Structures are given as C-alpha cells and as structure tokens.
Length: 262
Image: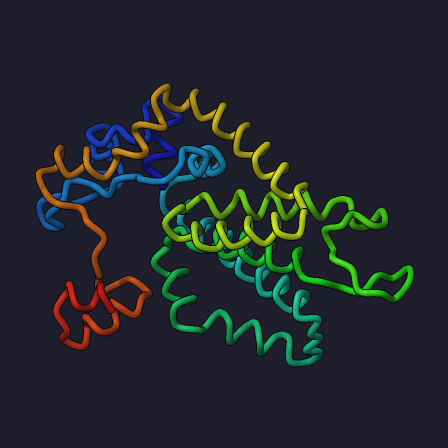
C-alpha cells in the first residue's frame, strides 16, 4: 500500500508493477533475490490508494506505525458498533472485552501483518449496526434505524452507505457482506443507503481516473499482468504469516492446496 501511495504521488499508476517494484527495491529495502519475487503488487481499487495518500508525508517505518494505529482504531470502532447493534452494555467488562477482541488470534494477526482487513471490518460493522432495529424514542414502537424517522436518524443512511463503500476496498473480502446487505436493503425498500453508496463510489471512481486513465482494466487484469511480468504465478495461497485457518493447518504439516481448500 505504501509503495503504491508513493507511486501515485509521483504520477505513476499503482498497477505499474515494474515502477512499484523499483520503489520497493531501491527505497524500501525489498530483497527480491532472497524473497523470490520482485515486489508485492497492488490489486485493489485505486480509491484505497487515494484514501491512504496522507501516509506519503511520513517515512515508511513511521507510516507503518501510523497504519497500525489506524487499524487498531478501526477495530475498536467496529467492536463498539457491534455492541450497539446488540444493545449490549458491558459496563465494567468493556475494557476486558475490547482487549479480548484485540488478542483474538486472527485479529491480532491482521494488525501485526498489516493487511487490509480492518476497513472492511468497520464497513461490515457500520452496515450491521445501522441496519439493526432499534426502539423509537418517540412512541416506543419497533422501527428500523434507516427509516429516517426523527432528526437523529437522518445521517444514518449516509453512514450505512459509507459502510457499503468500505466493503469495496478489498473486494474479495467484502463482496459477500456487500451482496447480503444490498439484498437486505432492497427487500425492505430502504434505498437511501444504496444511493449514498453508489454516489460515493461514483465520485471515487471518477477521481480514480486521475490516478490512472485505464484503472478499471488495470485493476481487473492486475494479477495476470503481474504473473506475466514477474514470471511467477501469484495465485491465492496459504502463507505462514497470514491469520487464516489455511495458514494454521499448513503450519501443522498439511499440504498447501489442501490447506487452502480447507
């Protein structure tokens, strides 16, 4: 992500594998020979880079610490949204609960490895919390928070739309929740969150043409073009630092393809 942000700040497409590899090797200390691949490529929508551009003003190590802090705050915000959706008030157990959420092995792995999961997690929590049914303070009857009743509910469709937008930052991770949320909203004829989400993505998509005039095609073909350029397959696979069940069973001695299948 950082090398892609640096590339974009210099007018280079984040999907230009050779240019990004040059940044990683010469400026960030990537050892292509020892690691067996020339770089870590960027496959995600260009608005991920756009939203991360402030990181470019920081040196890499400082930016890594800032990224860790941002992800931790996103985790805490998501946990609080889940508690609100469940209408659960843990009281004095709040801090132990948040500590447990942080030390949960997949969560801790995501934070330490620095992957892209936490913004998507916050998106899921935003949508889940704001689509939950609450009590109406006016009449005590059950009402959806997205119906727009009362001045306090006017901003909630926009936040739900923001949550839907966050699910697109890592499409292969957020697509399931995104589809379920869209079907849920359509079935209940709650279209304003969808309107906000579409509007947000249209704006981000339009601005992304400043990042790269051909970003839709480049994003779709990024993995294949990387494999052709680097001369190595870059398929989804288990790894010994990933916080996945596949990584756990692989570290236990199960073969790679079977671990990924599991």
